[in-house]
Image 1 (tube, rainbow, N blue to C red):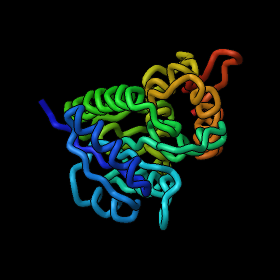
Image 2: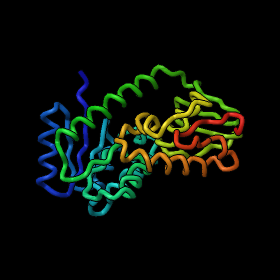
Image 3: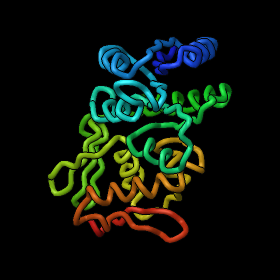
Image 4: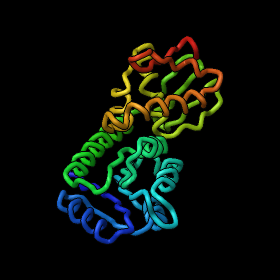
Length: 236
């Protein structure tokens, strides 16, 4: 059985030790850091399965760490779990928008955290197996839009789009079944797996950002009032 390698970052010694102890007890290999700068250097040189980070950190906060990971092709697929005492909806949306997989409020409820981590790792394992089974040439074409599923790249009229990993997953979901309406819950379960509270607002934010990047082809993503979203291939 694979032994997952986790990174934990928190500048409070007691919190860090608590997380390390409980994650070790679940069979994970855990590397702990007091700051995100050192953690980022480690992640880029080592095989890491998941990063758990506090938001409020010295030098580089958890949000900036997440941005760095998601903008690096070598680390963009590593799931990030954000731990923080900030519980306003806008904070949840901000964390998810930069690519965090999960948002867990402090004080951390250990069993809940362990359950969410297991869910993320199961989903990640399934995605990696699916990627390995794909041909490097496999792609989805919808009108002028093309997604390369092996390289996680997107272009429209042969012009590349700079999408985050979350935006790519969202577009891939819609493009796989054009015309099908996906509810916000279905979308968040596919691209993040987070709870319903986070899903309602964050999906709308992700859709708005994706439409902006599609530019003149933004109508390719349609809103179905009170239901969700779908891809309109004819608008592409």
